[in-house]
Image (cartoon, rainbow over all chains, first blue to last red; front, side):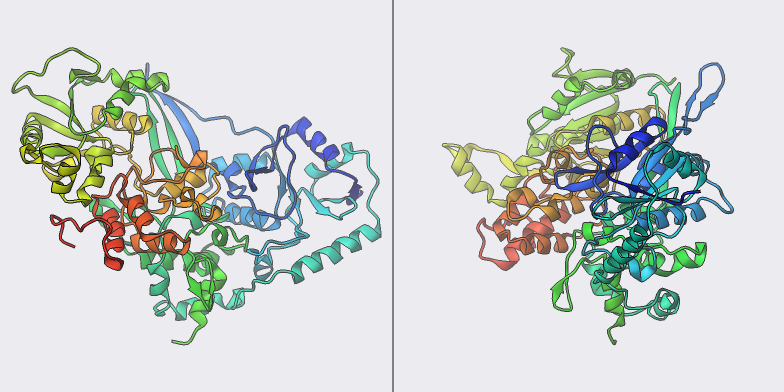
Amino acid sequence: MVRALKLDGLDILIESLKKDYLVYAPLSRNGDYFFSILEEEKAYLGCAVTIMPPKRILQPEVQTLFNYTAVDGYSIETPPLDQKQALFGIRPCDVHAMLGFDRVFGGRYEDPYWWERRKNTLVVAANCTTVAEECFCSSWGTGPGLDANYDLLLTDLEDGYLLEIGSPAGEEVAIQLDVPPAGEADLSKKARLLARATASIKKVLGVKPTELHDFLAERFDHPAWQPQADVCFSCGNCTITCPTCYCYNIFEDYSPALKAGERRSEWDSCQLLEFARIAHGFNFRRTRLDRFKHRSIHKLSWMDQQYQTPGCVGCGRCVRWCPSWPVRRGRPTSLADPVEIIGDLMEAV
Amino acid sequence: MADKLKTALFKFTCCAGCQFQLLYFFSPESFLETLDLLDFVYFRMATSKELKEDDHYDLAFIEGAISTTEDIEKVKKIRKQSDIVVGYGACAAHGGVQSIGDWTPQRKLEETVYPNPLQMKSIKVHPVDEFIRVDYQLRGCPIDEVEFMELIRALAAKKEPYLREYPVCVECKFANNICILLMRQGVLESMCLGPVTRAGCRVACTRNMRACFGCRGPMTNPNIPEMVRTFKGKGFTEHEIFTRFTEYAGLSPEFSEGARAYYERKAPYYERPEWRAA
């Protein structure tokens, strides 16, 4: 079996995918990138994370859980989830985030909506040969290259694309392409480009991921939390754009006559005041400090303890979209930046 | 199904745009279905029915801000006559555009506008809940149809409506918008109040690359000092920041904090309003 092919362009692959799959790809709009259905536009594979992570395709911001009608008894109808779809150009960090979702929505309580979509999804990942300044995936080992858990994997070799096959479903697509297999030179070039990308990542987490649990547990009451929380908007941008955040709220949309309705889920965020509000109006994360600390430690430590998957994959979205930019260590930094949060905590008391 | 709600819509100081919006909504069929739940006994723009003295209402909408002493008596009477009072639109919620005047002494406003100010009986503009308890508040300039539907359905079904409390940022990200606060520099259009403003507008402005100007008022527990600091960091003058915060909801305690940040730092451009001690 051929494990790797060499493509001159992406069109042949996209055309082939479109035959069987609904193709989602990063598209450019107003100078930024977002994951959407690929139609006439050109997919953009230059390294830039999309505004919203591709989790929105598998777990939409607002999704219908089921429709119901209450005429002549009850009837419940779940929306069709069997659309075969392909995530084209999904980044290694986002693939790792998706594996995190698999753990959260798998295990003890399975989320049927996630798994139904997940089973019908073809992962056409793309290695990063260039990196953005917000990226710090190498600290987590979630990029810039992907080793496993893909159906197809693209690498931009400058003179064409390397297409690696990672699963039978991927092979079915690749078989239809009439292109030559890749040579040794292509594979070594890929390794060289990835090494160059890794070396160009400037942001490094100050503490090794394995030591983070102890590091953060010791600093739970560190005075550096308060000044950070003071400049936090609690707007939820860091969590809404986070590829590993999985919290959602459930609400109802029903017809005025109460004859029919729809139950929906909507992404929620621990940064919002009402998130931890419970019956009788009590709120167990009332202060901004509580919420800021919760998000930071949950991402960096607790999620790993609970699900054995890191809560951060180093994609840099929170860094990019946090509206608060305080000056830390002499330069403006994004408040939500995990690297800077750890940097603050490393400073002596 | 329950009986229709006997409803009245009262207008005070405002442009009546929210009222007009109710006739103008072109939205899904379910909007008409929603209106079907209401039996309007008084709605000046849509019906010719006259107001009956000492009538009782299941539901009263109060549109507009309170700006005369007679208005205070009127809203108190409406409160007594109604089971549920809903503040309707930005003016009822926070005073609206005319609340900008509250930051100037009343005497100066009257002298500017009227030839004989000594005959005027106007007072400072106030939101409705300054005088009476308001059960629910529809925000925005104008109100949002989906939120309106959610409220009416919930009231008819006797359950709590799900009105969003989170900031505009959340909805903006849901819509895959680029952040104009971060991405645009130096133009007033980048002065976005999204991180402190309550959502529910379905990002009407930011989806069209317009900065949020806070018509829906503050979210729960917004970080106003940080918003002021952010605007300053982007190079906006204190006066520009002041006008941004006072444009629609300057009377809310939260946004007035942003506006006061201006007074505390600089000799006043406007005089400090005497009625609201800093």
